[in-house]
Image (cartoon, rainbow, N blue to C red):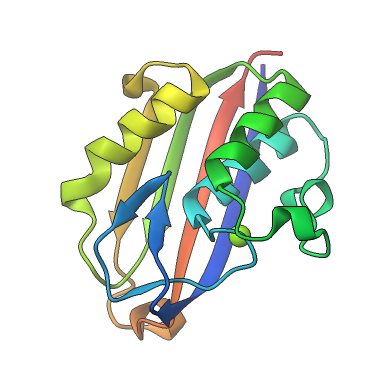
Length: 153
Ligand code: MG
């Protein structure tokens, strides 16, 4: 068994889609990014690569490569799983976002991730919290995500 950790941060920008775990969340702001900016999946990918000691998301999917522009992070996750052959036991995640409240969307995000990864939803935890108004997340300027996961390779 191997453990991995990943995190990510993106600026929030008006007019961009807010995509988390492949689910589009109704919001006036979304992640500014070269890809679709799915901060949760980016953290998970970095966790998988970390567990496999296989580098990081920036080396695997560089933003200097035009083929990664606006690319779906679901596709990046699928490619990461294929490349590493990682068999994921469980994932625990935290999303830090001031608004909107994510609670109504948590189950849909877990289901989407479970279907892409091919494990039960019960093995995927997604927790959301605010930054209590503090720092760039608290001021609504950014969104952060953290992931810890276990693989059996
Ligand atoms: Mg990212």
